[in-house]
Image 1 (spheres, rainbow, N blue to C red):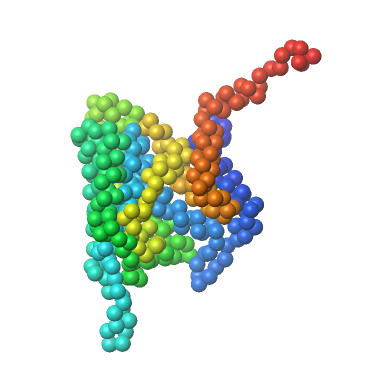
Image 2 (image 1 turned 30 degrees about the vertical axis):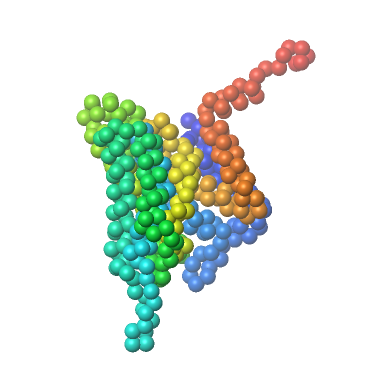
Length: 346
């Protein structure tokens, strides 16, 4: 197979072109510097900003691979962030002349509860799809609508500010010179990639996505695989919610994770995963997340008005999807190679 026929070829080309475009408009775009032992620069900002989307896209990849879809991940991000922010809260108190940060509940308990709620949300979606037989878009639409209400109930309709400094490390910390959110997304990617490519789980997921009934008749636990794909997607959205709330040091039940589900679906499709199920690429979803974040960075750095940035993003995604289509490439190739009429040739 020619290298341009590889499923990751066009996503990588798109990412490189966007990086070149950014570098052309901003000469300092590719410049990296070290401050306080950490890497700083536009590229680092893109890696850090893409982390929540990459996590959600990884979970969404497994769901789409089972021929499903989850449009409630944005609401789950808001719920998880709201639960963590409410439980942590935090204040600065002085004991014996020493300033100490105190949280409402221990941070590990708050993180555990936030991820537990996110897991419950994903399991709810999975149960409706796998065991009740509801259409995936309808099942997740219910939580998408109700989830915003739940998030606002958790935050009491207000923006909850977090004052507990150790919590800020999740979204703003650095480890080994790199942003901690990016390393967190990379770790989830590595574990997931090992699990689906070094065990039979990936083959099972693809079999369920190709034909759930045939997979069930072949002895595969198709319903359980579908259920846990949604549950895992919920946990990924929960981790993204922790990163988002930690980055902005607050939780907004109304706006946190807004439209993130659409960006996640775009990232997955840009990465070459088939929406019809059965074929998925975790690396492609990761690259798709970087494409969307790099495109967003380019739109803002070039001063594109906010009211047209969604149109620009849609146009770029449309072009990339066309280039990824084998039928479109074959049609273009036939038009280019079409022989000239005899009169024109003479």
